[in-house]
Image (cartoon, rainbow, N blue to C red; front, side):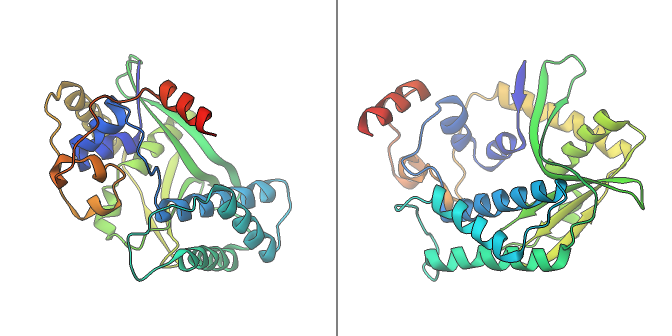
Length: 274
């Protein structure tokens, strides 16, 4: 059984060589995350903590939310984390997270949208035989008692606000929509909700059953393309500045390592150093 993820598929579409480095060679980059991903992780962890409290009938005060965010930021922060944007520093990114959370808190308190689960793991059977599956995690799942719809919520901390057309063609949450229908019933209605925290804005989208059926086929075909690919060529783009494999990418005149460490070897070396 092969289990894929949206991020794995997106990596292949973005750059085949990056896909090879990460998922085939399993190269561990010198720097495993960026300041943007650290910000996103810290905010996600705080919102997960917030809604776990809400599910237990306790609404934390806003200063508790900020304190939890500061704790999450400090716990996972690395001093050598790269910052690509020259007009930003660590404090700027930290304060952005506070702004995101304060705005979100004020907009959604008392958080009474009937949240069912947070960080819900889903597994989608693509081919009906169990040979190809997609695994993912839903940031937050709620059930709207007024509309009778399941709501799949996703938090975004990026500085880019996509068009409605792009949202309506988004693969990740649409796949999650398939999972919700498989769990709760094919006749259930599902609405997809993106929270673009940089813009303090929500964007909604829905998929028809025909669209979801087509998506399953397209996703399975993409996986088969991945498995039949023999040449993993690099794709240069603006995203390269944020790529953790740029220091070993031949497209930038760099040389990949002669032999890649396995994950087991990497962690043994890391343990000895510590």
